[in-house]
Length: 355
Image (tube, helix red, strand yellow):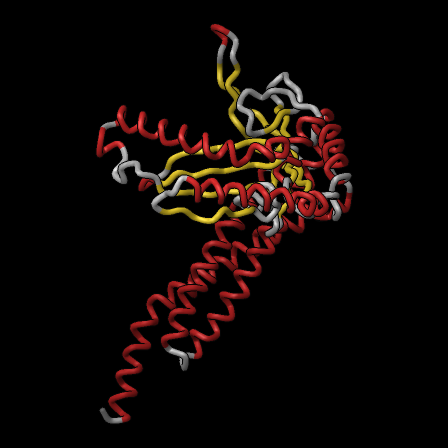
């Protein structure tokens, strides 16, 4: 193909790319207008607090700002991805390259808007917390911090939601909408033993219920005290080295954890299973697990029927427990729990938890 023909073909491809690029540019333009509206809301909020003015406790405009900022952020991320694809395909297209920079700036701007709206709502919620919730939250925060090596790890976030509550009262049962004030306690750390790498509890109090503060996940809205709330949060920190004394506890468990793992391996060898896997010890030295492949039908209950398969599983686990209990007998005082269950393809799993 000649150089002239190549240039014509290239310009044709660029024109074809213009349609999605134009769409992305239009999105950036719309986001620019929305960004200015959000800036006006943020500036007005800051001015109110600077002058000491009273704010409407419903904070409808601030919640709307947060929703729009999050939608704007998602749109900006979409525009950035679209423009990046075009810019990568046509690296010499200066319009696409400029748009790529503009989209990145817009995405960062909306992240700042979302952060600003979040702070506005949190600040307003803190000023409006019911007395009981404010007092309980302060006490829980202090109790948690006393157990932490780095108290800055704990996030305490006042918040509020509009929520519908079911009011039970015989013939007068009804649904009532009201504000639920909340205080979120959260720690995020890659070394946490939880699946989400996050520990969290939310204390709440409603403007329409006559009960005191409760844990937000409790649909019965049972009043909670400082001791119970603190214990529920700290339980999620088990095995995390950020808790005072936890490193020493983990180190102290190391010897017994190795002994229990060795005993589990001995039991697994003793039953002469078709296949088995070496016992594993968790990072906090608290959990030891192992498994073996039994003679149960690989197809499970499909092979012999539900009733017969359940009988076979019970017999298998009973026989395994007899061998396992004998192996673990010397360490019973150090063991909190032993769980055994069957899995797919005739595998039997054992999980041992130390005290």
